[in-house]
Amino acid sequence: MSEHRATLTWQRDGAEFTYKTYSRAHRWDFGDGHVVEASAAADFLGDPARVDPEQAYTAALSSCHALTFLALCALQKLTVERYTDEAVGFLEKAEDGKPWLARVELHPTIVFAEGVEVDPAKLAELHEKAHHECFLARSVKTQIEVVA
View: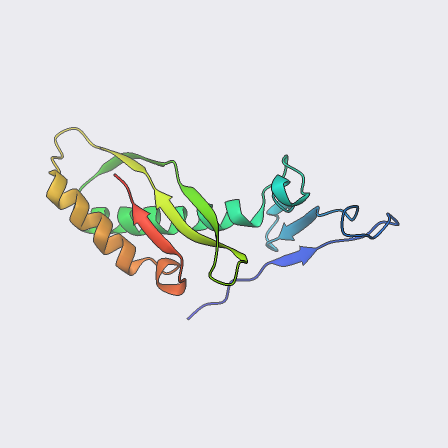
């Protein structure tokens, strides 16, 4: 159906290369002029001024849910004025003691156009359908919860 590419580039740049000293800074180049300066999370010796993979993963899941939700609303002629989400990813220890992003909570707030009435049951139905149709949610084992 489609391919989605990104090029990651990291360089030592002559710095000492030990576990505590090597730079976690790198970049993601999407080939279309969009470059993201990335790093490990600050808790893992990264640069807090850059996007870390866990943040990107959380944002990608939030984005996919939002875009799927908006598509469903458009198809049902439910005009949305604004959609915001305060998504939170939770890094937890797995059974083997190693960390993984076990859970992502989505906290969407939707403002519909004047005159568009969506009751709580319909809103929950839209979120549930968006969750099941989101490409990324269908692709991961991380638990994704919509907390509306």
